[in-house]
Structure formats: structure tokens, C-alpha cells
Image (cartoon, rainbow, N blue to C red):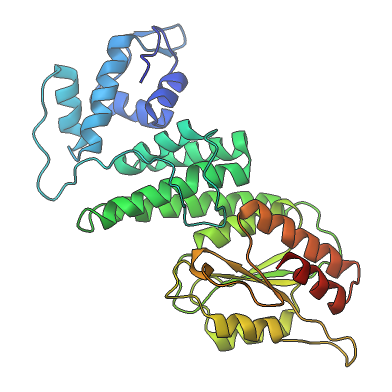
Length: 343
């Protein structure tokens, strides 16, 4: 990591170390880990020595040392007591995964690597304020789709892989990170849904197949659809077949997105049943298009009436087209032809 130049502001130092400015202020107030000098108006200016102390504080707290002990050791320039056996060693900073578990199947191009590294460090420290700030920054800077593909999904994948290979440690890190990612997606979606939506657009129904608990990819898709003005109905994790059937019949969606994280949860008979569901008057029956989203559907070509998007961007593009066609009054024949052309 490049050493910040002398006289940096708290914001610049926080970005360099992957912590929230509020965390720096808290450490200064509670433990005396602050800048040696302040400008008029009490603006903090951090020297290289100040930043070195902060970096040691970050390293120690990430390794499980209590903040008060870590602060004493960092200020003294010595070693802190080793963390107890119940405290985990620091998890590695996340690296982009070659096959991330989300609708985006392509490797991230790397524009959000700084936020990705910072998010990983903040998650290991259980630093809620830093995670919120980094997630908001990533979305504002890169847009929702890139932020999901380059920052959120790789971080979740890395943390999940870490606890799976370390004897189920770091579960608390994954749970906290998942909560903050979900919160960021829902905040974005709530703001986007306050904008205009084309009248008469049928909704897109989002659901996990039975026995599937991973909802974050669907939450990312829901937020992206809200951003382009497509109404959604999110039914969440492990939707029973009977409930999904009733939801489709009652709402008449333009499309149904079924998420499966693993092949063990992929429910092909249910997908076929949903694709065959129809409503409307005889002679003009309408059926929804089914999008098979997630890695669980891999290995089998989609059947007629179904699509398997290759990524979040493709899913958003497909769903916008399907909703536009449904809103403009295109019949089932035109919708089915469009699906057959892509499958």
C-alpha cells in the first residue's frame, strides 16, 4: 500500500486504510489515536507516523485484539497480546472470483478493486460504518450493476469461501457483510422506486426455488429493475411451489425469475409448470416467460418458454424488453417467438 503523503485529511486517510471517517473519530476520542497536529477549526491533518499507528491499529483489531489493547500496542509501537483462541486470525482481503455466485457470470473488469479491498477489510473488522460508506461509494461511483459485479458479489464470495475452508470460522463476518449488502441494495431500490414507472407495465416476479435461501442476487436484480422503472414482486427465499403457483396466477407477471444457487436446489419441474401457466380469455391466453437465474441451472439447455441470462446486465435487458412488449399489448405468440429466438 502506498504511504499517504503528509498532512492528509481524515477522509483521505480513511479511504487509504479502508475505514470509515467515523471510526477514526471514535478511535481518536476513545483511545487517543489521532493526528499529531490540527489546523484551525480542529481539522485533523495526518502525518506518515500518524498513519502508521492507524495501520497497526487496523491490523491488530482485524486479528481479533480488543480495540483498547490494540490502541495501547499501536501507540507504544510494540506487540499486542495475542488474540484468544476464540478470536479468528484475519481473513484474507477478498479477490475477484472467477465464477461469482450472482447473475453476473463474467469476471469483474476491476474498476471497483479499491472498494473491494476496503470492503473486505471492513468486514473482517466488523466495521459497520465503513461497510456502509464503502457500499454507498461503490454504487455512486460505478453504478449498481458494476458495484454488484465488481465489489459486492466478489466480497461475499471470498468471505463465504474463507469460512468454508477454515472450519466454519468467520461466520459472523459473512452474516454482517450480507446484511449490509442487502441494506445497501434495498436503500438504492427504495430511492429508484420513487421515480416514474410506465403505466400498465406488468410486474416481474422474483423468487428463490424451494430449499434455496440465497436471496442477495435477486435483491440486486430487484434494485436494478427499480432503477429502469420495471415493477417487481419479491417473494424471497425458499418459496413453496403452491405459493409460487398462486402468486403467478394472481399477478399475471410478464416474467418470473427463479433463482437457484446450486444444482441440488434447481427445480426443473417447477420451472416447467410456471412456464406452462396461462391466464386470460380463451384464444388470447398469456403465459409468463421464465428466467432461470443462478449457477444451479447450468448444465441443461433451457426449455421453450425459458431463458437463462448470462449476467445481471443481460437479465435486466431481457426483462425490460419483455415488460415493454407486455405493456404495449404484444400477445403470447410474440412473446414466445422472442423467447425461442434467444434459446
